Length: 613
Image 1 (spheres, rainbow, N blue to C red):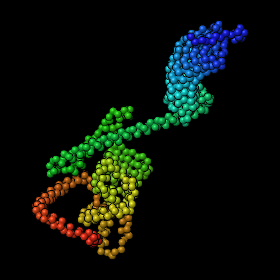
Image 2 (cartoon, rainbow, N blue to C red; image 1 turned 180 degrees about the vertical axis):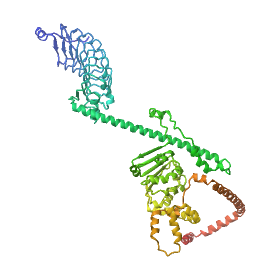
Image 3 (tube, rainbow, N blue to C red; image 1 turned 90 degrees about the vertical axis):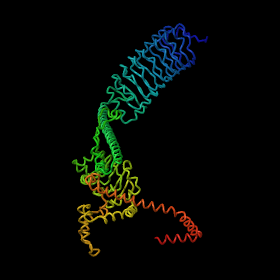
Image 4 (cartoon, rainbow, N blue to C red; image 1 turned 30 degrees about the horizontal axis):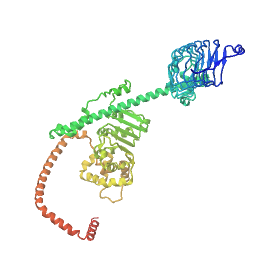
Protein backbone atom coordinates (compact mmCIF):
# COMPACT_ATOMS: atom_id res chain seq x y z
CA UNK A 1 0.00 0.00 0.00
CA UNK A 2 1.39 3.44 -0.90
CA UNK A 3 1.91 5.78 1.97
CA UNK A 4 0.13 9.14 1.94
CA UNK A 5 0.95 12.16 4.02
CA UNK A 6 -1.69 13.06 6.59
CA UNK A 7 -2.66 16.69 6.75
CA UNK A 8 -3.65 18.15 10.10
CA UNK A 9 -4.15 21.84 10.66
CA UNK A 10 -3.83 23.72 13.91
CA UNK A 11 -6.89 25.07 15.69
CA UNK A 12 -5.97 28.62 14.75
CA UNK A 13 -5.77 27.73 11.03
CA UNK A 14 -9.10 25.96 11.18
CA UNK A 15 -10.72 29.00 12.79
CA UNK A 16 -9.07 31.44 10.35
CA UNK A 17 -9.79 29.39 7.19
CA UNK A 18 -12.63 27.21 8.33
CA UNK A 19 -14.04 26.24 4.90
CA UNK A 20 -10.99 26.46 2.63
CA UNK A 21 -7.64 24.79 2.27
CA UNK A 22 -4.80 25.97 0.02
CA UNK A 23 -1.93 23.59 -0.77
CA UNK A 24 -0.45 25.20 -3.89
CA UNK A 25 3.23 24.94 -4.79
CA UNK A 26 3.93 22.32 -2.12
CA UNK A 27 5.70 19.91 -4.49
CA UNK A 28 3.04 17.30 -3.79
CA UNK A 29 3.05 14.16 -5.94
CA UNK A 30 -0.08 12.66 -4.35
CA UNK A 31 -3.15 14.06 -2.67
CA UNK A 32 -2.64 13.94 1.12
CA UNK A 33 -5.14 12.42 3.53
CA UNK A 34 -7.19 15.32 4.88
CA UNK A 35 -8.47 14.30 8.31
CA UNK A 36 -11.24 16.07 10.20
CA UNK A 37 -11.98 18.58 7.41
CA UNK A 38 -15.30 17.25 6.09
CA UNK A 39 -16.75 20.76 6.25
CA UNK A 40 -14.31 22.09 3.56
CA UNK A 41 -15.94 23.93 0.64
CA UNK A 42 -12.81 25.07 -1.26
CA UNK A 43 -9.69 23.00 -1.93
CA UNK A 44 -6.68 24.31 -3.91
CA UNK A 45 -3.89 22.02 -5.23
CA UNK A 46 -2.48 24.38 -7.86
CA UNK A 47 1.08 24.02 -9.22
CA UNK A 48 2.01 20.63 -7.80
CA UNK A 49 3.01 17.29 -9.34
CA UNK A 50 -0.10 15.28 -8.53
CA UNK A 51 -0.78 12.45 -11.02
CA UNK A 52 -4.06 11.13 -9.65
CA UNK A 53 -7.10 12.54 -7.85
CA UNK A 54 -7.63 10.64 -4.60
CA UNK A 55 -8.20 10.92 -0.84
CA UNK A 56 -10.88 13.60 -1.19
CA UNK A 57 -14.00 11.42 -1.39
CA UNK A 58 -14.85 12.29 2.25
CA UNK A 59 -15.14 16.02 1.42
CA UNK A 60 -18.76 15.79 0.35
CA UNK A 61 -19.48 19.48 1.04
CA UNK A 62 -16.75 20.55 -1.38
CA UNK A 63 -17.93 23.18 -3.88
CA UNK A 64 -14.66 24.42 -5.43
CA UNK A 65 -11.82 22.08 -6.46
CA UNK A 66 -8.71 23.54 -8.12
CA UNK A 67 -6.15 21.10 -9.55
CA UNK A 68 -4.64 23.48 -12.10
CA UNK A 69 -1.08 22.77 -13.33
CA UNK A 70 -0.50 19.22 -12.20
CA UNK A 71 0.21 15.95 -14.02
CA UNK A 72 -3.20 14.29 -13.84
CA UNK A 73 -3.89 11.90 -16.71
CA UNK A 74 -7.45 10.80 -15.88
CA UNK A 75 -10.50 12.36 -14.28
CA UNK A 76 -11.36 10.08 -11.33
CA UNK A 77 -12.09 10.00 -7.60
CA UNK A 78 -14.89 12.58 -7.82
CA UNK A 79 -18.00 10.42 -7.75
CA UNK A 80 -18.90 11.29 -4.12
CA UNK A 81 -18.54 15.06 -4.55
CA UNK A 82 -22.16 15.67 -5.56
CA UNK A 83 -22.09 19.28 -4.33
CA UNK A 84 -19.11 20.24 -6.48
CA UNK A 85 -19.85 23.31 -8.62
CA UNK A 86 -16.42 24.43 -9.84
CA UNK A 87 -13.86 21.94 -11.17
CA UNK A 88 -10.56 23.37 -12.44
CA UNK A 89 -8.36 20.80 -14.19
CA UNK A 90 -6.52 23.06 -16.61
CA UNK A 91 -2.94 22.38 -17.70
CA UNK A 92 -2.81 18.66 -16.97
CA UNK A 93 -2.40 15.57 -19.14
CA UNK A 94 -6.02 14.49 -19.48
CA UNK A 95 -6.89 12.80 -22.81
CA UNK A 96 -10.56 12.03 -22.29
CA UNK A 97 -13.56 13.60 -20.58
CA UNK A 98 -14.96 10.91 -18.25
CA UNK A 99 -16.25 10.05 -14.79
CA UNK A 100 -18.37 13.16 -14.37
CA UNK A 101 -21.68 11.32 -14.15
CA UNK A 102 -22.39 12.23 -10.50
CA UNK A 103 -21.36 15.90 -10.77
CA UNK A 104 -24.78 17.09 -11.91
CA UNK A 105 -24.51 20.37 -9.99
CA UNK A 106 -21.33 21.41 -11.81
CA UNK A 107 -21.40 25.08 -12.82
CA UNK A 108 -17.86 25.64 -14.18
CA UNK A 109 -15.66 23.00 -15.83
CA UNK A 110 -12.17 24.07 -16.87
CA UNK A 111 -10.21 21.53 -18.93
CA UNK A 112 -8.00 23.86 -20.93
CA UNK A 113 -4.40 22.95 -21.76
CA UNK A 114 -4.93 19.17 -21.87
CA UNK A 115 -4.82 16.57 -24.65
CA UNK A 116 -8.55 16.08 -25.23
CA UNK A 117 -9.47 15.26 -28.84
CA UNK A 118 -13.25 14.82 -28.51
CA UNK A 119 -16.13 16.41 -26.64
CA UNK A 120 -18.02 13.63 -24.87
CA UNK A 121 -19.72 12.56 -21.62
CA UNK A 122 -20.97 16.07 -20.77
CA UNK A 123 -24.60 15.95 -21.97
CA UNK A 124 -25.84 15.25 -18.41
CA UNK A 125 -24.38 18.50 -17.05
CA UNK A 126 -27.60 20.44 -17.46
CA UNK A 127 -26.54 23.14 -14.90
CA UNK A 128 -23.12 23.78 -16.44
CA UNK A 129 -22.68 27.47 -17.36
CA UNK A 130 -18.99 27.68 -18.32
CA UNK A 131 -16.99 25.08 -20.28
CA UNK A 132 -13.35 25.78 -21.09
CA UNK A 133 -11.68 23.44 -23.59
CA UNK A 134 -9.07 25.86 -24.95
CA UNK A 135 -5.64 24.58 -26.01
CA UNK A 136 -6.63 20.96 -26.55
CA UNK A 137 -6.60 18.73 -29.65
CA UNK A 138 -10.20 19.16 -30.81
CA UNK A 139 -10.78 18.94 -34.56
CA UNK A 140 -14.54 19.44 -34.51
CA UNK A 141 -17.32 20.55 -32.17
CA UNK A 142 -20.39 18.39 -31.52
CA UNK A 143 -22.05 16.30 -28.76
CA UNK A 144 -23.22 19.45 -26.98
CA UNK A 145 -26.87 18.48 -26.66
CA UNK A 146 -28.15 18.61 -23.07
CA UNK A 147 -26.03 21.56 -21.92
CA UNK A 148 -29.13 23.70 -21.55
CA UNK A 149 -27.57 26.18 -19.07
CA UNK A 150 -24.27 26.72 -20.91
CA UNK A 151 -23.61 30.45 -21.44
CA UNK A 152 -19.88 30.45 -22.23
CA UNK A 153 -17.86 28.01 -24.36
CA UNK A 154 -14.13 28.55 -24.82
CA UNK A 155 -12.56 26.61 -27.67
CA UNK A 156 -9.54 28.80 -28.45
CA UNK A 157 -6.29 27.33 -29.78
CA UNK A 158 -7.53 23.96 -31.03
CA UNK A 159 -7.58 22.42 -34.52
CA UNK A 160 -11.29 22.85 -35.16
CA UNK A 161 -12.47 22.84 -38.80
CA UNK A 162 -16.26 22.70 -38.31
CA UNK A 163 -18.87 23.27 -35.61
CA UNK A 164 -22.18 21.48 -35.01
CA UNK A 165 -24.93 21.39 -32.34
CA UNK A 166 -24.16 24.90 -31.05
CA UNK A 167 -27.58 26.07 -32.23
CA UNK A 168 -29.11 23.57 -29.76
CA UNK A 169 -27.68 25.45 -26.76
CA UNK A 170 -30.55 27.77 -25.72
CA UNK A 171 -28.52 29.95 -23.27
CA UNK A 172 -25.14 30.20 -25.02
CA UNK A 173 -24.02 33.85 -25.16
CA UNK A 174 -20.25 33.75 -25.55
CA UNK A 175 -18.38 31.45 -27.94
CA UNK A 176 -14.61 31.76 -28.38
CA UNK A 177 -13.22 30.06 -31.50
CA UNK A 178 -10.03 32.06 -31.98
CA UNK A 179 -6.95 30.39 -33.50
CA UNK A 180 -8.48 27.30 -35.09
CA UNK A 181 -8.67 26.05 -38.71
CA UNK A 182 -12.10 27.37 -39.70
CA UNK A 183 -11.93 28.52 -43.35
CA UNK A 184 -15.56 28.81 -44.55
CA UNK A 185 -18.78 30.11 -43.07
CA UNK A 186 -20.52 26.90 -44.21
CA UNK A 187 -18.46 24.95 -41.65
CA UNK A 188 -19.99 27.02 -38.84
CA UNK A 189 -23.36 27.82 -40.42
CA UNK A 190 -25.23 26.35 -37.43
CA UNK A 191 -24.24 29.50 -35.52
CA UNK A 192 -26.66 31.48 -37.67
CA UNK A 193 -29.52 29.51 -36.12
CA UNK A 194 -28.57 30.42 -32.56
CA UNK A 195 -30.88 33.04 -31.02
CA UNK A 196 -28.83 33.63 -27.86
CA UNK A 197 -25.25 34.22 -29.08
CA UNK A 198 -24.10 37.79 -28.49
CA UNK A 199 -20.30 37.51 -28.40
CA UNK A 200 -18.14 35.41 -30.71
CA UNK A 201 -14.49 35.37 -31.84
CA UNK A 202 -12.94 34.01 -35.05
CA UNK A 203 -9.63 35.87 -35.06
CA UNK A 204 -6.66 33.67 -35.89
CA UNK A 205 -8.73 31.49 -38.26
CA UNK A 206 -8.31 31.44 -42.07
CA UNK A 207 -11.89 32.73 -42.37
CA UNK A 208 -10.92 35.99 -40.63
CA UNK A 209 -8.52 36.81 -43.49
CA UNK A 210 -11.25 36.77 -46.15
CA UNK A 211 -12.61 40.05 -47.50
CA UNK A 212 -16.22 38.87 -47.00
CA UNK A 213 -15.64 37.70 -43.42
CA UNK A 214 -17.10 40.50 -41.35
CA UNK A 215 -20.17 41.39 -43.39
CA UNK A 216 -21.04 37.69 -43.86
CA UNK A 217 -20.93 37.05 -40.10
CA UNK A 218 -22.97 40.16 -39.34
CA UNK A 219 -25.52 39.45 -42.04
CA UNK A 220 -26.12 35.89 -40.82
CA UNK A 221 -25.90 36.60 -37.10
CA UNK A 222 -27.93 39.76 -36.57
CA UNK A 223 -28.12 39.27 -32.77
CA UNK A 224 -24.35 39.65 -32.23
CA UNK A 225 -23.13 42.53 -30.07
CA UNK A 226 -19.41 41.79 -30.20
CA UNK A 227 -17.22 40.20 -32.85
CA UNK A 228 -13.59 39.38 -32.07
CA UNK A 229 -13.87 41.30 -28.77
CA UNK A 230 -14.97 44.51 -30.55
CA UNK A 231 -18.39 46.06 -30.19
CA UNK A 232 -20.47 46.08 -33.39
CA UNK A 233 -21.82 49.48 -34.45
CA UNK A 234 -25.05 50.20 -36.31
CA UNK A 235 -23.02 51.56 -39.23
CA UNK A 236 -21.20 48.25 -39.53
CA UNK A 237 -24.52 46.42 -39.52
CA UNK A 238 -25.87 48.73 -42.22
CA UNK A 239 -22.77 48.27 -44.39
CA UNK A 240 -22.92 44.51 -43.89
CA UNK A 241 -26.53 44.53 -45.07
CA UNK A 242 -25.67 46.55 -48.19
CA UNK A 243 -22.70 44.35 -49.04
CA UNK A 244 -24.75 41.21 -48.42
CA UNK A 245 -27.40 42.40 -50.87
CA UNK A 246 -24.74 43.04 -53.49
CA UNK A 247 -23.24 39.62 -52.86
CA UNK A 248 -26.66 38.03 -53.20
CA UNK A 249 -27.25 39.81 -56.50
CA UNK A 250 -23.81 38.75 -57.67
CA UNK A 251 -24.53 35.19 -56.60
CA UNK A 252 -27.85 35.16 -58.47
CA UNK A 253 -26.14 36.54 -61.56
CA UNK A 254 -23.42 33.91 -61.24
CA UNK A 255 -26.04 31.18 -60.93
CA UNK A 256 -27.82 32.58 -63.96
CA UNK A 257 -24.60 32.59 -65.96
CA UNK A 258 -23.83 29.06 -64.81
CA UNK A 259 -27.28 27.92 -65.90
CA UNK A 260 -26.88 29.60 -69.28
CA UNK A 261 -23.44 28.05 -69.64
CA UNK A 262 -24.82 24.61 -68.84
CA UNK A 263 -27.72 25.13 -71.20
CA UNK A 264 -25.27 26.12 -73.92
CA UNK A 265 -23.20 23.00 -73.24
CA UNK A 266 -26.25 20.75 -73.48
CA UNK A 267 -27.45 22.47 -76.64
CA UNK A 268 -24.06 22.00 -78.29
CA UNK A 269 -24.10 18.39 -77.13
CA UNK A 270 -27.51 17.96 -78.77
CA UNK A 271 -26.27 19.52 -82.00
CA UNK A 272 -23.18 17.29 -81.94
CA UNK A 273 -25.23 14.14 -81.42
CA UNK A 274 -27.55 15.10 -84.24
CA UNK A 275 -24.59 15.84 -86.47
CA UNK A 276 -22.92 12.51 -85.70
CA UNK A 277 -26.13 10.61 -86.34
CA UNK A 278 -26.69 12.51 -89.55
CA UNK A 279 -23.16 11.79 -90.79
CA UNK A 280 -23.58 8.14 -89.91
CA UNK A 281 -26.80 7.97 -91.92
CA UNK A 282 -25.25 9.73 -94.89
CA UNK A 283 -22.35 7.28 -94.84
CA UNK A 284 -24.69 4.31 -94.59
CA UNK A 285 -26.88 5.53 -97.45
CA UNK A 286 -23.85 6.25 -99.63
CA UNK A 287 -22.52 2.77 -98.93
CA UNK A 288 -25.86 1.24 -99.90
CA UNK A 289 -25.96 3.30 -103.09
CA UNK A 290 -22.64 1.84 -104.21
CA UNK A 291 -24.22 -1.61 -104.22
CA UNK A 292 -27.11 -0.60 -106.49
CA UNK A 293 -27.36 -0.07 -110.23
CA UNK A 294 -25.55 3.18 -111.06
CA UNK A 295 -27.74 3.76 -114.15
CA UNK A 296 -30.88 4.41 -112.12
CA UNK A 297 -31.63 8.15 -111.82
CA UNK A 298 -32.77 7.76 -108.23
CA UNK A 299 -29.43 6.25 -107.29
CA UNK A 300 -27.33 9.27 -108.13
CA UNK A 301 -24.85 9.95 -105.31
CA UNK A 302 -25.31 13.70 -105.62
CA UNK A 303 -29.04 13.28 -105.16
CA UNK A 304 -28.53 11.13 -102.11
CA UNK A 305 -26.14 13.62 -100.55
CA UNK A 306 -28.33 16.59 -101.36
CA UNK A 307 -31.57 15.11 -100.07
CA UNK A 308 -30.31 13.45 -96.94
CA UNK A 309 -30.38 16.59 -94.85
CA UNK A 310 -33.90 17.57 -95.80
CA UNK A 311 -35.14 14.01 -95.33
CA UNK A 312 -33.45 13.67 -91.97
CA UNK A 313 -36.13 13.88 -89.24
CA UNK A 314 -35.75 16.61 -86.64
CA UNK A 315 -34.41 15.24 -83.38
CA UNK A 316 -36.21 16.13 -80.20
CA UNK A 317 -32.86 16.24 -78.44
CA UNK A 318 -33.79 13.72 -75.76
CA UNK A 319 -31.25 13.96 -72.93
CA UNK A 320 -29.81 11.18 -70.86
CA UNK A 321 -30.40 11.16 -67.11
CA UNK A 322 -26.98 12.55 -66.23
CA UNK A 323 -27.52 15.67 -68.32
CA UNK A 324 -31.04 16.12 -66.97
CA UNK A 325 -29.77 15.94 -63.41
CA UNK A 326 -27.05 18.47 -64.17
CA UNK A 327 -29.70 21.02 -65.10
CA UNK A 328 -32.02 19.94 -62.25
CA UNK A 329 -34.99 19.30 -64.43
CA UNK A 330 -34.32 21.99 -67.05
CA UNK A 331 -35.26 20.52 -70.43
CA UNK A 332 -32.98 21.56 -73.28
CA UNK A 333 -34.04 20.28 -76.68
CA UNK A 334 -32.58 22.96 -78.95
CA UNK A 335 -30.91 21.63 -82.08
CA UNK A 336 -29.04 24.81 -82.91
CA UNK A 337 -27.37 27.68 -81.10
CA UNK A 338 -26.49 31.28 -81.99
CA UNK A 339 -24.10 33.12 -79.69
CA UNK A 340 -22.38 36.49 -79.85
CA UNK A 341 -19.43 36.66 -77.48
CA UNK A 342 -17.44 39.86 -77.83
CA UNK A 343 -16.44 40.15 -81.48
CA UNK A 344 -17.24 36.49 -82.30
CA UNK A 345 -20.48 35.16 -83.78
CA UNK A 346 -20.74 31.39 -83.18
CA UNK A 347 -23.24 29.28 -85.11
CA UNK A 348 -23.92 25.67 -84.09
CA UNK A 349 -26.20 23.46 -86.19
CA UNK A 350 -27.79 24.18 -89.56
CA UNK A 351 -30.79 25.88 -87.93
CA UNK A 352 -28.47 28.62 -86.69
CA UNK A 353 -28.00 29.89 -90.24
CA UNK A 354 -31.54 31.27 -90.13
CA UNK A 355 -30.30 33.82 -87.59
CA UNK A 356 -28.63 35.71 -90.44
CA UNK A 357 -32.12 36.86 -91.46
CA UNK A 358 -32.63 38.63 -88.12
CA UNK A 359 -32.68 42.37 -87.82
CA UNK A 360 -29.28 42.69 -86.18
CA UNK A 361 -28.54 46.03 -84.56
CA UNK A 362 -25.96 48.15 -86.33
CA UNK A 363 -23.76 48.15 -83.24
CA UNK A 364 -23.77 44.36 -82.82
CA UNK A 365 -23.32 43.67 -86.54
CA UNK A 366 -20.45 46.14 -86.76
CA UNK A 367 -18.74 44.64 -83.72
CA UNK A 368 -18.59 41.09 -85.17
CA UNK A 369 -15.23 40.39 -86.81
CA UNK A 370 -15.10 36.60 -86.39
CA UNK A 371 -17.74 34.11 -87.55
CA UNK A 372 -17.50 30.49 -86.40
CA UNK A 373 -19.44 27.62 -88.03
CA UNK A 374 -19.75 24.30 -86.18
CA UNK A 375 -21.76 21.17 -87.06
CA UNK A 376 -23.05 22.70 -90.31
CA UNK A 377 -22.68 21.29 -93.82
CA UNK A 378 -20.41 23.52 -95.89
CA UNK A 379 -22.90 23.41 -98.76
CA UNK A 380 -25.48 25.01 -96.48
CA UNK A 381 -22.97 27.67 -95.43
CA UNK A 382 -22.29 28.53 -99.09
CA UNK A 383 -25.94 29.49 -99.57
CA UNK A 384 -25.80 32.14 -96.79
CA UNK A 385 -22.43 33.67 -97.64
CA UNK A 386 -24.09 36.57 -99.52
CA UNK A 387 -26.15 37.34 -96.41
CA UNK A 388 -23.04 37.16 -94.25
CA UNK A 389 -21.34 39.73 -96.45
CA UNK A 390 -24.29 42.11 -96.07
CA UNK A 391 -25.20 41.55 -92.41
CA UNK A 392 -21.66 41.56 -90.99
CA UNK A 393 -19.53 43.76 -93.23
CA UNK A 394 -16.62 43.80 -90.77
CA UNK A 395 -16.25 40.02 -90.51
CA UNK A 396 -12.61 39.26 -91.31
CA UNK A 397 -12.04 35.88 -89.70
CA UNK A 398 -13.92 32.67 -90.57
CA UNK A 399 -13.72 29.46 -88.55
CA UNK A 400 -14.96 26.05 -89.70
CA UNK A 401 -15.28 22.98 -87.46
CA UNK A 402 -17.24 19.83 -88.37
CA UNK A 403 -18.42 21.33 -91.67
CA UNK A 404 -17.46 18.53 -94.12
CA UNK A 405 -14.82 20.44 -96.03
CA UNK A 406 -13.59 17.51 -98.11
CA UNK A 407 -12.11 19.00 -101.30
CA UNK A 408 -10.14 22.03 -102.39
CA UNK A 409 -12.88 23.08 -104.78
CA UNK A 410 -15.06 24.10 -101.83
CA UNK A 411 -12.73 26.98 -100.96
CA UNK A 412 -13.73 28.62 -104.25
CA UNK A 413 -17.07 29.54 -102.68
CA UNK A 414 -15.38 31.91 -100.20
CA UNK A 415 -14.34 34.22 -103.04
CA UNK A 416 -17.78 35.84 -103.03
CA UNK A 417 -17.21 37.42 -99.61
CA UNK A 418 -16.20 41.05 -99.18
CA UNK A 419 -12.92 40.37 -97.37
CA UNK A 420 -11.14 37.70 -95.32
CA UNK A 421 -7.99 38.34 -93.30
CA UNK A 422 -7.90 35.06 -91.38
CA UNK A 423 -9.14 31.55 -92.02
CA UNK A 424 -9.24 28.72 -89.47
CA UNK A 425 -10.10 25.19 -90.62
CA UNK A 426 -10.30 22.77 -87.70
CA UNK A 427 -9.03 19.26 -88.61
CA UNK A 428 -12.03 17.81 -86.77
CA UNK A 429 -14.72 17.10 -89.34
CA UNK A 430 -12.80 18.70 -92.23
CA UNK A 431 -10.78 16.04 -94.11
CA UNK A 432 -9.44 18.64 -96.56
CA UNK A 433 -6.91 19.71 -93.91
CA UNK A 434 -5.08 16.42 -94.42
CA UNK A 435 -4.18 17.53 -97.97
CA UNK A 436 -0.57 18.69 -98.16
CA UNK A 437 -1.20 21.71 -100.40
CA UNK A 438 -4.55 22.93 -99.11
CA UNK A 439 -3.13 26.13 -97.59
CA UNK A 440 -1.38 27.03 -100.83
CA UNK A 441 -4.58 26.51 -102.76
CA UNK A 442 -6.46 28.82 -100.38
CA UNK A 443 -3.79 31.49 -100.80
CA UNK A 444 -3.90 31.12 -104.58
CA UNK A 445 -7.67 31.12 -104.98
CA UNK A 446 -8.28 33.91 -102.45
CA UNK A 447 -5.18 35.94 -103.30
CA UNK A 448 -7.31 39.07 -103.85
CA UNK A 449 -8.05 39.10 -100.09
CA UNK A 450 -4.34 39.36 -99.15
CA UNK A 451 -4.85 36.77 -96.41
CA UNK A 452 -2.78 37.39 -93.25
CA UNK A 453 -3.21 34.15 -91.29
CA UNK A 454 -4.30 30.58 -91.97
CA UNK A 455 -4.90 28.37 -88.93
CA UNK A 456 -3.09 30.91 -86.79
CA UNK A 457 0.09 30.93 -88.91
CA UNK A 458 1.28 34.14 -90.54
CA UNK A 459 1.20 34.15 -94.35
CA UNK A 460 4.57 35.12 -95.87
CA UNK A 461 5.50 36.43 -99.30
CA UNK A 462 7.20 33.10 -100.04
CA UNK A 463 3.89 31.36 -99.38
CA UNK A 464 2.17 33.54 -101.97
CA UNK A 465 4.92 32.86 -104.53
CA UNK A 466 4.72 29.12 -103.91
CA UNK A 467 0.91 29.18 -104.23
CA UNK A 468 1.19 30.91 -107.61
CA UNK A 469 3.77 28.43 -108.84
CA UNK A 470 1.71 25.43 -107.79
CA UNK A 471 -1.73 26.47 -109.05
CA UNK A 472 -1.17 29.31 -111.53
CA UNK A 473 -1.28 26.96 -114.52
CA UNK A 474 -4.54 25.49 -113.18
CA UNK A 475 -6.35 28.81 -113.45
CA UNK A 476 -4.88 29.48 -116.88
CA UNK A 477 -6.03 26.12 -118.22
CA UNK A 478 -9.45 26.48 -116.64
CA UNK A 479 -10.05 29.88 -118.24
CA UNK A 480 -8.49 29.11 -121.63
CA UNK A 481 -10.42 25.90 -122.15
CA UNK A 482 -13.83 27.43 -121.40
CA UNK A 483 -15.82 29.00 -124.25
CA UNK A 484 -16.56 32.72 -123.93
CA UNK A 485 -20.27 32.29 -123.23
CA UNK A 486 -19.49 29.85 -120.43
CA UNK A 487 -16.83 32.14 -118.97
CA UNK A 488 -19.15 35.17 -119.01
CA UNK A 489 -21.90 33.18 -117.29
CA UNK A 490 -19.53 32.28 -114.45
CA UNK A 491 -18.27 35.81 -113.85
CA UNK A 492 -20.22 38.37 -111.86
CA UNK A 493 -21.52 41.62 -113.36
CA UNK A 494 -18.41 43.61 -112.51
CA UNK A 495 -16.14 40.90 -113.85
CA UNK A 496 -18.23 40.61 -117.05
CA UNK A 497 -17.65 44.29 -117.68
CA UNK A 498 -13.92 43.89 -117.11
CA UNK A 499 -13.75 40.78 -119.31
CA UNK A 500 -15.65 42.42 -122.21
CA UNK A 501 -13.41 45.45 -121.95
CA UNK A 502 -10.33 43.23 -122.22
CA UNK A 503 -11.77 41.59 -125.33
CA UNK A 504 -12.59 44.95 -126.92
CA UNK A 505 -9.14 46.41 -126.24
CA UNK A 506 -7.24 43.50 -127.81
CA UNK A 507 -4.93 44.79 -130.50
CA UNK A 508 -4.64 48.28 -129.02
CA UNK A 509 -1.26 49.74 -128.20
CA UNK A 510 0.29 48.37 -125.06
CA UNK A 511 0.34 50.70 -122.12
CA UNK A 512 -2.92 52.42 -123.09
CA UNK A 513 -5.28 51.64 -120.26
CA UNK A 514 -8.40 53.65 -119.65
CA UNK A 515 -9.31 55.16 -116.30
CA UNK A 516 -12.47 53.09 -116.31
CA UNK A 517 -10.42 49.89 -116.51
CA UNK A 518 -8.34 50.92 -113.49
CA UNK A 519 -11.51 51.55 -111.47
CA UNK A 520 -12.84 48.18 -112.55
CA UNK A 521 -9.69 46.44 -111.38
CA UNK A 522 -9.84 48.13 -108.00
CA UNK A 523 -13.50 47.17 -107.68
CA UNK A 524 -13.14 43.58 -108.81
CA UNK A 525 -9.88 42.62 -107.14
CA UNK A 526 -10.24 38.96 -108.03
CA UNK A 527 -8.25 37.73 -111.00
CA UNK A 528 -10.41 36.71 -113.98
CA UNK A 529 -8.60 33.41 -114.40
CA UNK A 530 -9.13 32.54 -110.74
CA UNK A 531 -12.82 33.45 -111.03
CA UNK A 532 -13.30 30.48 -113.35
CA UNK A 533 -12.40 28.20 -110.41
CA UNK A 534 -15.80 28.15 -108.76
CA UNK A 535 -17.75 25.73 -106.59
CA UNK A 536 -21.24 24.40 -107.11
CA UNK A 537 -23.12 22.73 -104.28
CA UNK A 538 -24.89 19.40 -104.35
CA UNK A 539 -28.22 21.16 -104.78
CA UNK A 540 -26.96 22.59 -108.04
CA UNK A 541 -26.10 19.09 -109.19
CA UNK A 542 -29.59 17.91 -108.33
CA UNK A 543 -30.99 20.61 -110.60
CA UNK A 544 -28.64 19.49 -113.38
CA UNK A 545 -29.42 15.81 -113.01
CA UNK A 546 -29.90 15.15 -116.72
CA UNK A 547 -26.57 16.71 -117.53
CA UNK A 548 -24.90 14.54 -114.88
CA UNK A 549 -26.50 11.41 -116.37
CA UNK A 550 -25.05 12.27 -119.79
CA UNK A 551 -21.65 12.68 -118.22
CA UNK A 552 -22.02 9.29 -116.57
CA UNK A 553 -22.76 7.70 -119.94
CA UNK A 554 -19.71 9.34 -121.39
CA UNK A 555 -17.65 8.13 -118.43
CA UNK A 556 -18.91 4.60 -118.98
CA UNK A 557 -17.91 4.68 -122.62
CA UNK A 558 -14.59 6.18 -121.71
CA UNK A 559 -13.96 3.40 -119.20
CA UNK A 560 -14.78 0.82 -121.83
CA UNK A 561 -12.23 2.40 -124.14
CA UNK A 562 -9.70 2.36 -121.33
CA UNK A 563 -10.41 -1.33 -120.76
CA UNK A 564 -9.80 -2.06 -124.44
CA UNK A 565 -6.61 -0.05 -124.34
CA UNK A 566 -5.56 -1.88 -121.19
CA UNK A 567 -6.15 -5.20 -122.95
CA UNK A 568 -3.88 -4.17 -125.80
CA UNK A 569 -1.25 -3.02 -123.33
CA UNK A 570 -1.47 -6.36 -121.60
CA UNK A 571 -0.83 -8.17 -124.86
CA UNK A 572 2.19 -5.98 -125.49
CA UNK A 573 3.36 -6.68 -121.96
CA UNK A 574 3.22 -10.44 -122.57
CA UNK A 575 5.34 -9.98 -125.67
CA UNK A 576 7.78 -7.87 -123.65
CA UNK A 577 8.12 -10.61 -121.06
CA UNK A 578 9.46 -12.95 -123.71
CA UNK A 579 12.06 -10.42 -124.85
CA UNK A 580 12.89 -9.08 -121.40
CA UNK A 581 15.58 -11.63 -120.30
CA UNK A 582 17.83 -10.80 -123.24
CA UNK A 583 17.08 -7.08 -122.84
CA UNK A 584 17.95 -7.23 -119.17
CA UNK A 585 21.31 -8.84 -119.87
CA UNK A 586 22.11 -6.13 -122.38
CA UNK A 587 21.02 -3.37 -119.95
CA UNK A 588 23.24 -4.77 -117.21
CA UNK A 589 26.16 -5.07 -119.57
CA UNK A 590 25.73 -1.50 -120.82
CA UNK A 591 25.40 -0.19 -117.25
CA UNK A 592 28.61 -1.98 -116.13
CA UNK A 593 30.52 -0.65 -119.11
CA UNK A 594 29.14 2.87 -118.56
CA UNK A 595 30.16 3.17 -114.91
CA UNK A 596 33.44 1.30 -115.29
CA UNK A 597 35.24 4.61 -115.13
CA UNK A 598 33.57 6.33 -112.17
CA UNK A 599 35.11 9.75 -112.74
CA UNK A 600 34.08 10.02 -116.37
CA UNK A 601 30.61 8.70 -115.54
CA UNK A 602 30.05 11.41 -112.91
CA UNK A 603 31.17 14.11 -115.34
CA UNK A 604 28.76 12.76 -117.94
CA UNK A 605 25.85 12.80 -115.47
CA UNK A 606 26.70 16.34 -114.39
CA UNK A 607 26.78 17.45 -118.00
CA UNK A 608 23.36 15.89 -118.64
CA UNK A 609 21.88 17.70 -115.68
CA UNK A 610 23.37 20.97 -116.87
CA UNK A 611 21.94 20.44 -120.37
CA UNK A 612 18.47 19.75 -118.97
CA UNK A 613 18.44 23.10 -117.15
